[in-house]
Amino acid sequence: MKLPASMAVPKSAEGVGAIRTLTIELFFDFVCPWCLIGKRHLDAAARKLAELRHDVRLDVLWRSHALLPDTPEGGVPYQAFYVARLGSSEAVIRRRAQVQQVGNAAGVQFAFDRIQVLPNTAKAHALIERTHKTQQAKLVDRIFTAYFLEGKDIGNCSVLERLALECGLKRDVCSSPGGDGFRADRTNPEGARYPLHGVPFFVVDESLAFSGAMPSETMLNAILQALDA
Image (tube, rainbow, N blue to C red; front, side, top):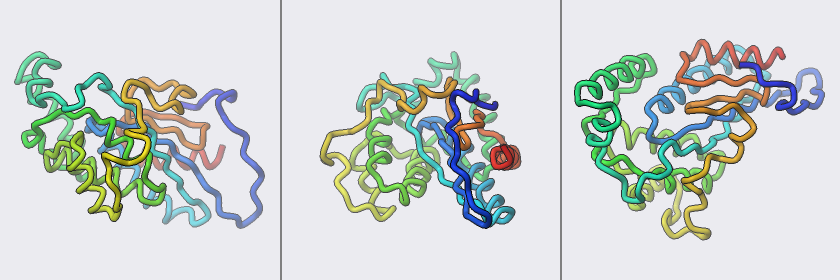
């Protein structure tokens, strides 16, 4: 999807041989399995881009987008939530099989049966927003894997603190100045600029947007298209 010209920001001229920075905004939520798949596909696309274009540096901006902002702070029972949401245990099984099939292509082995709590993701998103940009990608991936592969309650402060420490972040997640720093009842304000209806949602250099966990080849083609725009 090419964004209207009114949404695009003019780019300054770059000299011959200069390194060009290409920005990708990734709108996501930690309870969305498609977002983890999309992240892994983006990782693969970024590796391929590095091989093809040594003159391009990719800059990923992590944009929080809570899908279920009204989830209680302590979360709700995960399995029961999805049975109620999809109508039956059989429907849940079918949906998970569909997600796992796509996840296989991204190298993700979901462990849905290990998840006990559907969390409120406000604290997890707040942690990402307070983390230095150079460490965000690592922490985002660690929180995703803790939830979908290990069944951890990522709405729990002590869990988030352990994950942060594993990523080299020495901070008290739950008592950082300013509280949570993220309003779970509001979409990240950057999303208001785009036709955002769900996640994952990608915006490339403020000129090209696409949604869903597209294959890495498709993402790479979109990135190359944005470079040529």
